[in-house]
Image 1 (cartoon, rainbow, N blue to C red):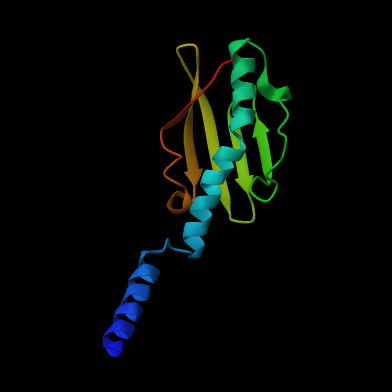
Image 2 (cartoon, rainbow, N blue to C red):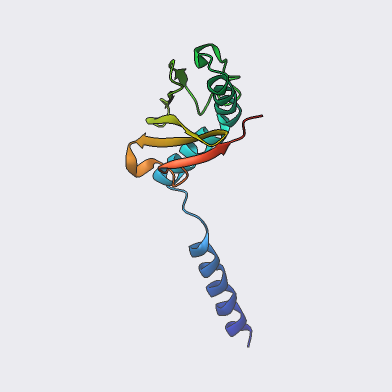
Length: 129
């Protein structure tokens, strides 16, 4: 009886360990690429507001509250945002696409195998308040 309970408990822990999310290097880098998108949400919103006002977004400041994820960030006069994470070797390019009264963002990244599913053809919308 005790032997069966012990074997059952060991099997249960084994199943639980197998069901845990992966913690390998590639999985952590995918999480980092998704976090890069989340860290720049307010920045992208500010860029969208500038574009809607027909102003250059080049002067929009990034608050830099995720320095471990976003090593560098640049925005050009058309609002294209380049994000780099040198620690994990990630690069994301976010391109604003006008839709209705606001913008959604086209997202591509490299290396493709390490980019999260959040970085698809279009992410958004970014509110235009």
